[in-house]
Image 1 (cartoon, rainbow, N blue to C red):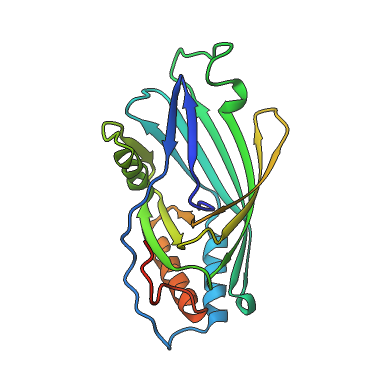
Image 2: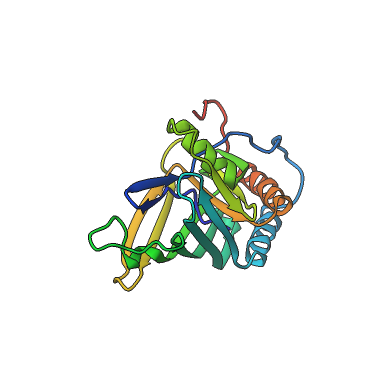
Length: 232
């Protein structure tokens, strides 16, 4: 599970690796006045997210042989509030970087020992009243699309094992996040941010699609979704 659609930069040996991108192939869904109640839908979403446990993957880049970025995401607390049409999430992310064999950190270089280990605790409410679109995407495709859009199609990303991302969209920065980030032995850094996108990572596509379908239903019941305007 991946908390939100986060922009990730890894500064490695003088090269800034900017991750994340986007596709726009939403699961098909039509507004409906029938189906599960909002309370039942929110409960289903809460249970499916809580069942995820720790989701992890390794990421490598074609232009950085031997460098491996490992990420583990865990939802520590998930609570659905049907009355407020809101899902409350607390998420823990642990990131480590494995250097290429024989590579050592140099004093004054772009990376330090603290950059090799990052621990993030993030809290975020998701209001389905404010969600306008929901898509399911393969994380590796997101990464490669980002480089293609940045005019670097020669850089390719490999994500092992495959993970899937349920992405929530809005036309304004309605998603808010509070994070506490600890790099290596440094003191934690607290930060509040907003974004037009948010999302969750899943280890299998079937669960991702089921949760996305439930979220679309919750969005419709809460009055979200794009109606008379174009999203982008």
